Length: 251
Image (tube, rainbow, N blue to C red; front, side, top):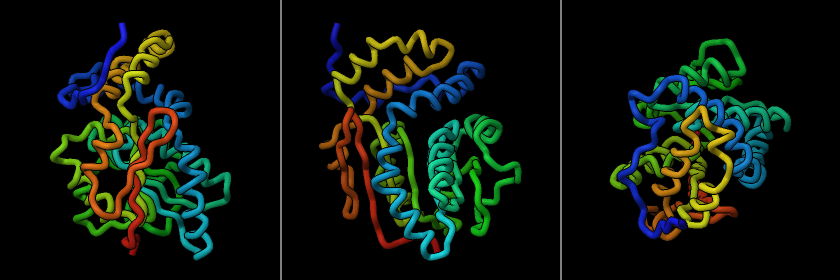
């Protein structure tokens, strides 16, 4: 039976966000994101179009490219980005932050590429680091980076928190890229018919993926929520990019 998603179901909660989520399933979910996001998140395309040109520009200035991955979860997107930049010969300092310490501890154990302790304000270091922090804390510190990015974060945030969150992201970075799902009945039904329960049977991926599709936005809905300096792009298949390219950046 086909499911129609004409209305956003913002009241739903992903199993992985529950305080009492099974620890083994949660850790397997972080691990499975590495496989899932390689195929569905389209960050490789985003990197080629938006991130690499900016990183090369920073490199030509003799500076380290500074990135903040907000709501980084298990750190897979930050890890991919660090590897792509390294392959292109670009020095980068990437920090993944999340308010869920369970995710940060897993990312530190499984995704960090340096053994040194992360010092988020050490602008001269390169590497991939993880911290349990919020954007609010970093804004209060006066932290600045070249790029703020997030993956599948917007649909986790309540409507009244989205504009303040985006304002903080814009205060932290010269460029902000929010990458998320686009709510679609077709996407939901295709995802539901796939064999994900077999591939990801030990994690929350399948059920939480269905929940995320129910909670995600459509382009016109995001357009209404954005302010000056932001724009929404629709990417195939079933994805939305919310982009900000401002004049503020790392001091």
